[in-house]
Length: 296
Ligand SMILES: [Zn+2]
Ligand SMILES: [Zn+2]
Image (tube, rainbow, N blue to C red):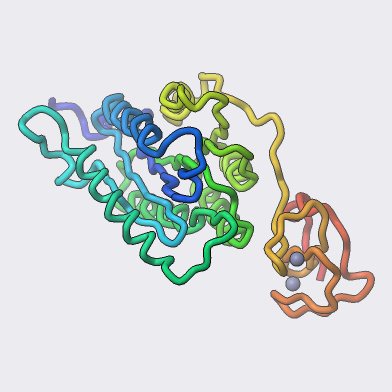
């Protein structure tokens, strides 16, 4: 018991912020039901907390209109025990999740039904980073944070700028973004997020074994990753979205001043107002955007 305080936070103590996709449009069409998905995830979260008693888990629900914190293992409420048997983790998480789902649905009463709506991952990523910044500022002793995105719905191209900003912010704070994509197509945003921040991206082939994928890949703490072979990206989808129509594009025009991306040639940059001459505007692969240096 009388161990030195510096021993408390060893290399392998983790803070895992899990972003849970609750998009009803996706879950109504998925082969894996939301309750099955939850049972895999809850077992995984319990396992993380069991691996080290100082480990911490935060869950952020990502809906299609809003996002909110639904669980924080460090709060006193979640540390209590029910009938001396089980922590109340599951019941409090499920209750908050249900309240969140109802509120999230109510927010969209006026919106017309139509094409599949993406989940608000830009919002939940920002919330995760805010939480982690607070942990960083709480003192020198803190667990090593990482983010795990569990996404099934399609990417929202209109969130491109916000998501990329969150990714670069995570990269600057050395917070890896792990991602597990459980939908049918793969997510270009998640692949880029994990690639840029040094996290792991994986798309499980068989969703019945989701718990095993989560345990063998995403339970690995940051210290152990230096000597464990985790899946490496075989190819990353670097496509970007144009700022004018929010479409995903392979080739586009880039403003040489502010690096805004457009699918068509414009006379003037809508972001910074620079006037494009024939020489100033250059057609380039959108994936090269971040490597180009601005020429003024
Ligand atoms: Zn466009
Ligand atoms: Zn510009």
